[in-house]
Image 1 (cartoon, rainbow, N blue to C red):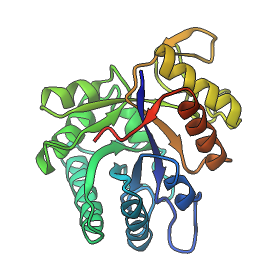
Image 2 (cartoon, rainbow, N blue to C red):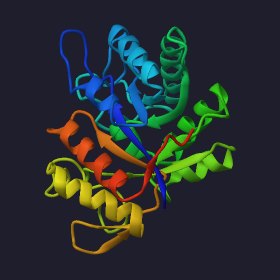
Image 3 (cartoon, helix red, strand yellow):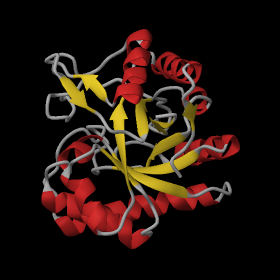
Image 4 (cartoon, rainbow, N blue to C red):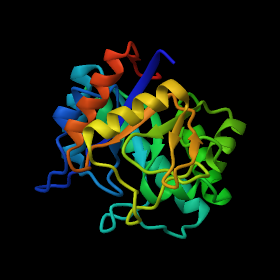
Length: 252
């Protein structure tokens, strides 16, 4: 692979509370997954982050999640399909309105946290999210792990599915992510993360937490803006890729 997208979860501050360094991350990545106010992000923060992304020509994605500010969207919610559908439509529309005031728009959709992991296997919620994206704008691609229920359903509905891999998260042998809180779930060393991403892009595989080689097919690599040392890891990843002749470009 000679080209890859780098995406990061940004806009996750709330009011007086800032999380991560969005400005610095926007100087590194090519796509920005912006919170939509349900798991994080207030309107002013999101408007400011949209403007910063637009000024750099960074693609803006709607990072939709469960309505769970207290849990940062990392807790499963057994929500009715109709409610989840409406929540996703609402979040995409709100972020797109903010983006359009700075001459940009939402270019893709990426579920967040517990919702992201749930719809890998939860057919009802996967269908609700996929239908919501299609009904807002069938031209919006969706980011997800390969081979999950959500990706298959989105494809059936005519959406473009962008497979992604995670720079700083551990993998189980089945290609899913190690749950946060378990050993090996989150990586923090910039050199280790950069070498890992380079191997992913070059070989299409990554070492799982058990030591088994896990196949990884990705058009985009995710970096978490709220991780400790996020900017250092992002810079290390970008530097390693560019130094090895791999171009960085958005997938849209």
